[in-house]
Amino acid sequence: MNSVSSTLQFWRPRSAGAHAWLRAVVTTRHGGRSPAPYDTLNLGLATGDAPQHVHENRRRVQQALGIAPGNLHVLHQVHGTAIWDVPGPCPAEGDGLRTTVPGVALVVGIADCVPAFAWDARTRHLALVHAGWRGTAAGILAGALSHFLDSGSRAEDLHVALGPCIGPCCYVVSADVAAQFPPPATRSAAAGLHLDLRSANRSQAEGLGVLPQNIESDPPCTGCNPAQFFSHRRERGHTGRLWAVAWIDAGVE
Image: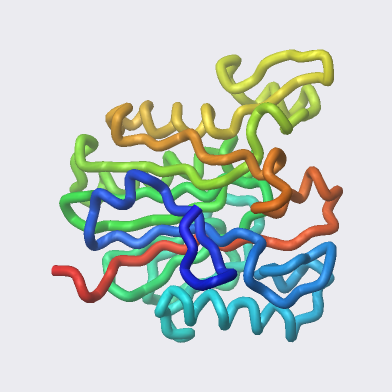
């Protein structure tokens, strides 16, 4: 965890730090103004929280990260596989964004689903996707990486970092959900069938040739860390939303 101000905090993938031009963060629940059960840095407008609280929380995040409001791109997420290029004509709905333009900030909202950062270290092509179980089963991360490869990226230059999400320790699913994933991503336990979204997304990246050492797939579990992260499952739907944000630093050549 890395403090930006006295109260606002962000999680950062370790691997992103190796690239001076890359900025990638996930918010925590600290530093906002929302009351319980959205306490305090809720960034989701569709949660039941007062809109004025959410807008103020978003303003604080933008200010702390130094991102102009016009450069912040937020989608209405629908658990699909649509990934849009920004800037450009971008529909309101989708679950992923990509860019090659410095200063353009990509955003996905999460509260258990996987925020997956993907980038080409050579071409500075950047993508950020929202991968819940539906998006993961449908291959949204594979779609982002395939676009890179189709655009001229080399597999050895690609990197993936998974952000805070619900871990297999806390994610019990029905048999019909588990059946949509290969056995390595599911296991049986006393509580039922456990799904490992981290493993499933890592497998997609490896399947497209991303080098194992270029995949960071051990983020914190949102379900196990109530002091730091919102968890839709842990709080039975009555909770806030985190933001994953990624952008190319315009000040780095």
